Each structure stands twice: as C-alpha cells, then as structure tokens.
Amino acid sequence: MATNGNEPATKADLTKLRDDVHSDMAKLRDSVNGDMAKLRDDLVEQMRDSETKLLSAFYAFAESNQKRLVQMDATDAILISRVATLETRLLEVEKRLNIPPTQ
Picture 1 (tube, rainbow, N blue to C red):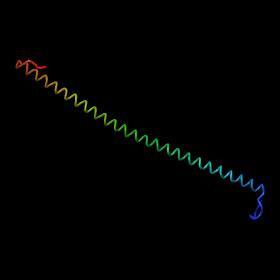
Picture 2 (cartoon, helix red, strand yellow):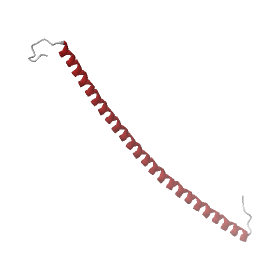
Picture 3 (cartoon, rainbow, N blue to C red):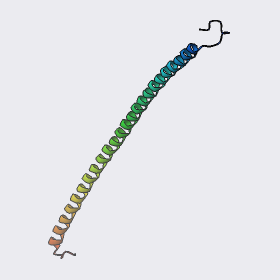
Picture 4 (cartoon, rainbow, N blue to C red):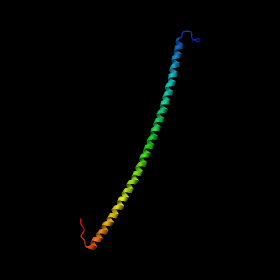
C-alpha cells in the first residue's frame, strides 16, 4: 500500500479505493433516501392538515347556511300563516256585508 503518496498504486489499493467509494455511495444513497422519505412524510402530513382545515371551513359554512335556510323556511311559514289569517278575516267581513267572494 502506498504510504508517502509517491509510490504507484497497486491493484489492492485500487480495489480498496473502489470498495470505499462504493461504501460511501451506499451510505450517501441511504441518507438521501431517508431524507426523501422524511420529506415525503412531512408533505403528506401537511397535505392532510390542509385537507382537514378546508373540510372544517366547508362544514362551518354549510352549517351556517343550513341555519339561514331553516330561518327562511320559518319566516315563510309565519308569513303564510299571517296571510291565511288575513284571508279568513276578509272572508268573515265579506260574509257580514253579504259581498260575494271574487276569484
């Protein structure tokens, strides 16, 4: 093995160098793969968090919209009831005055 840097490299030196490079590359590949997996997991988690926030916002909107629709239905029912009461009262007045109803 060359010790002073000026001696020619032997096949054993080249084999060791190749094995060292392969070993370093394998470690680097494993490290990059681990980093990529962590980045992927982080991205998936952030996407799920975003999805959860969006769904929560949509559900909140739908709930408030549903309450508004229920309130409008109740208002319509009250108005219909009041109109029916007025029609009944008008009919009673027409009966007392002996005025035939118009249709």
